[in-house]
Length: 209
Image: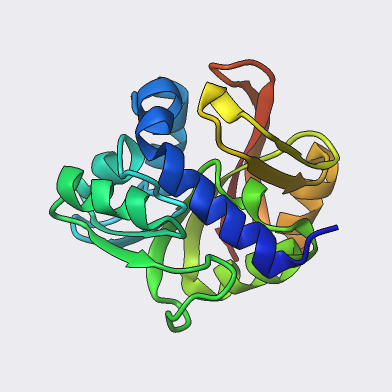
């Protein structure tokens, strides 16, 4: 079994190697169900409010959508993804970092989105990750996170036919909801949402009490 640092390095290298493929085939297009959750997470915020997008990838479509109304800050572990994001979304700020170790102070953000990215973080770090996200949110503000819905740790050697090896690590849906609640969040809504390439992801909207 690989250690956390090795898994994260391989995830970063994988996304560096397939950034264009990932954007073209999977996450480059807007989806109304995702936009609706982003809208719920940012409801009532003033224009220019600070919104953190963790695992922002190439910035399209999610960081780009957020930046139309708010001050978007995108974080990703892949240098190539961030290079694309800076070109696509020049009005946003971007940071190369591990989402499990962020350099922001308490209550720094008015909303946080974590879309299709926490599933790549070794799951024994998920509890601490969500506790950290709780601290980063201002009181009464919201988190939207897309999580796994099965209990699985594993890899694919040729993800999306790109020749890239990719790693996943997540719990089942009920355990994931509990992780969010145990961090102190009030879960407002959660549901299993079909994915364009098959299967489902767990969408969770939660609030810092």
